[in-house]
Length: 150
Image (cartoon, one colour):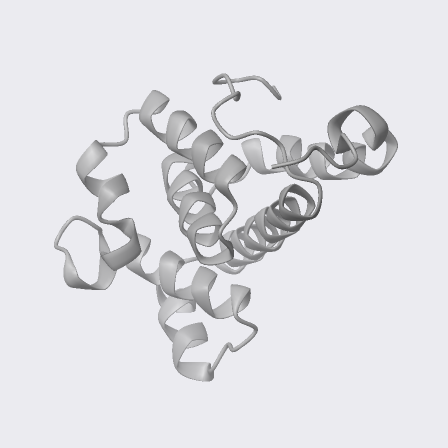
C-alpha cells in the first residue's frame, strides 16, 4: 500500500472537528464498551483495516472479550450480545447502509433514550467518516497504540 496524503499530519485543521466529536462522545450516556462494538462493526462493514486495528485494541483494553470481537461479524447468530447491544448494532448497520426502516428505529428507541439515540447516531456517522478518511488516505494498520488520540 502506497502512502497518499498523511491526513493525520496534513489535515489537522479538518480532523480537529472529528476529534471534538470524540471528546463529546466520551461524556455520552451511551456506554463506552457499546460504542467500541459499534465502531468495530461499522469498520468491518466499511472494510477499514486501520480502524479495525484501532478499535479492536481499544475494545480489548476496555475489557471486551476476544470471543465477542471475533463473533461480531455474525452477531445475529451468537448469544454473546445483550438486547441493547443488538439494537445498537442493528441501528449502526442501518445507518451505515443508509436504510433505516421504522422497525429498526422502533427497536432502538425502545432501548435507548432520545438523547442516547442521538449520541449513538452521532457516533455511527462519525466512525463512518473516519473510515472514509482512512480508506481514502490509508494509514498502515498495526501502528495504533491504545489511547493514541486521547
